[in-house]
Amino acid sequence: MPNIGLFALFEKSMNLTTSQTLEFIGKRLETWTPEMINPELFIKNNGLDILKFPYSFRDDGLQYWRIIKNYVQEIIENTYKNGIQNGKL
Image (cartoon, rainbow, N blue to C red; front, side, top):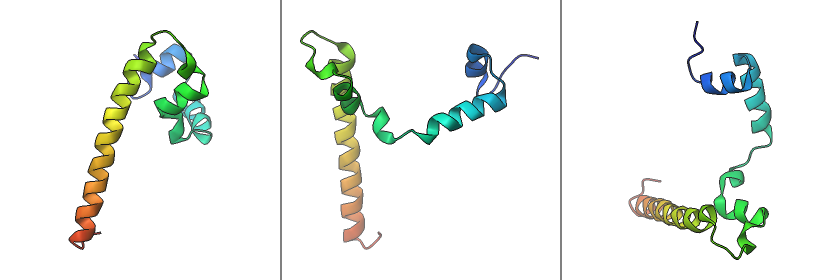
């Protein structure tokens, strides 16, 4: 029977069973924090911010990250501001 489903690619590439995959992911999540997916922190913590040459992950990625971050921040601020004014929150 072919290996299909949620973890199929991971299981096939790592040669793990479903229970081993879930155990692996569970252990990884024990130390995971949202800061780990923040490109600004990743770039700074790995010394990529001091590179003097063009680096697309840093240069282009940060532009996208900041656009998305500002957009989400505006939506949250407007939602809470409007909600508090209207007595909804």
